[in-house]
Length: 263
Image (tube, rainbow, N blue to C red; front, side, top):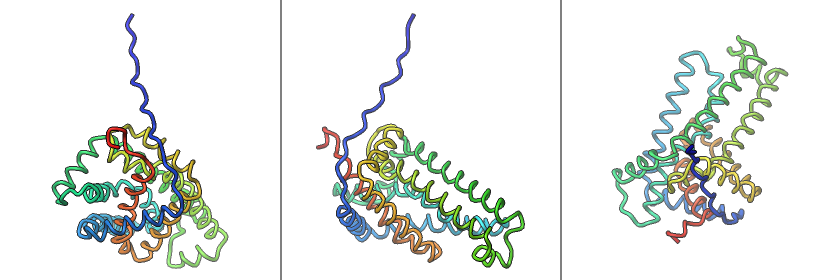
């Protein structure tokens, strides 16, 4: 009787050590890529900003403004997927290829045909879970009529409001840290290599485990820059998103040695 064998799991790539000093160089490389091709960065980030405005407007239209803040912070969960276009630009610059929209879109399309789409599903599902938790906490602590003209006063002066702020931010931080761990280099790796998304996630988690201090610092940098951008009603993302996106590509290239046939 014939038996079927499952395909062997792909071996996770080797990893280099990432120091905190490396993060400065990586951010500098991200800024250089943005300055080398600002039109691409602004255009790609602009789509992200407009989408954020539309979603926030819809929340207000449907009477769900209390979800605006958690959704805005949750945007950071799917930002790595939005960075695929920035990875394409950085790769073109790195390899000295002429930059054209057609070639950038072709690179993104090629990556989307691989497991990038499954990784996007994972992070998108995490965003949905985060929004469900935020809604559950709001209704559980503030009540179904918790939003009103005195919402901000209730939020900052009542035990229920302070509990919502604390628990909401704490649970959001835990989810963000988990998603950061599985996605910090998995998206650029899936863009660059034809590997399965589970191998990419495992490699990303290994990087965080082997470089806990520098990766926590990198996570904090992303969180702080994203938070400051939200204070500008997403406008700051026009610069922050391209720089972080390009820098994420350089983090991946520094952390993961190229395959033997490319070395």
